[in-house]
Length: 323
Image (cartoon, rainbow, N blue to C red; front, side, top):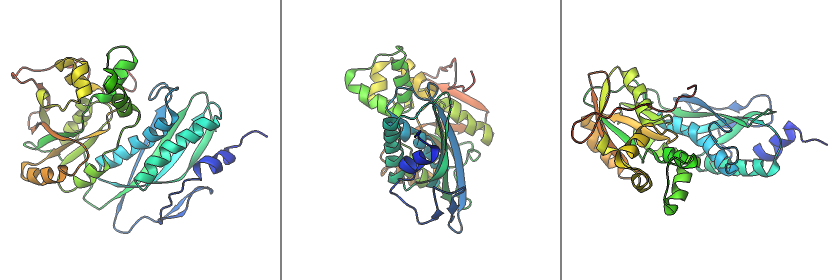
């Protein structure tokens, strides 16, 4: 008897051990029934990953499951939202039981860690693997981090070490050589990004604007500048580079990778000067770096300056989904 959609759902996706009290009815019906908390706004986001576009088809399926959820949780982190629920639409060219089991291990390990329950979705057959996850979270009214709040004089920050995922991709295509002792770290940064949920929550009431870095730091920062109608001066020498990136490329090539590489899922955000002390106290407890890399200006546009004052010009600003 052929495997049915419903048997796959029951065997793999309805088996999540973690259950939230605000889910009145989860997987198994036409719709989930949910109990949003009073006095909270619902934050919703959706991302799609396509085989050989967003991940290599032969990549570790456990890592694919992790990343498929992580990219959505990163969006919630950038809004200062607490994650709660997720739905999954999965298209597969064939049923591979081992692949599905590993995919679910990666998906549910991250979901359980951050209190996320899978509440429904869809499975279907198609010519290539396509994974679409919609994630939902909560944020108190007027406390969401947005892209339109940056003001001239605000300091500009980034979490972590952008560029590591870009380095991993460059190595995969033979464009960079990575020392053996850095390979595992760099591969994990590409295949298993960690959504910065704790920093996102801590930035409520501190940051004036925020975005997650998925398509390249320079390009994503540009979205803040456009929505806030401001500019920025980014000091290239301040970019926080990991040892892997700093030792694999020369300084300028490493900086360009940090600015344009994409797939980092770090947070880029702005903070008014009067909240700097508050930020520093909070960031001391984070499990990632927090680095000031520039300042917001009244003059529109993003200016990239070297230590000697000269300008760094980029051939491209980040990842283009259709270019």
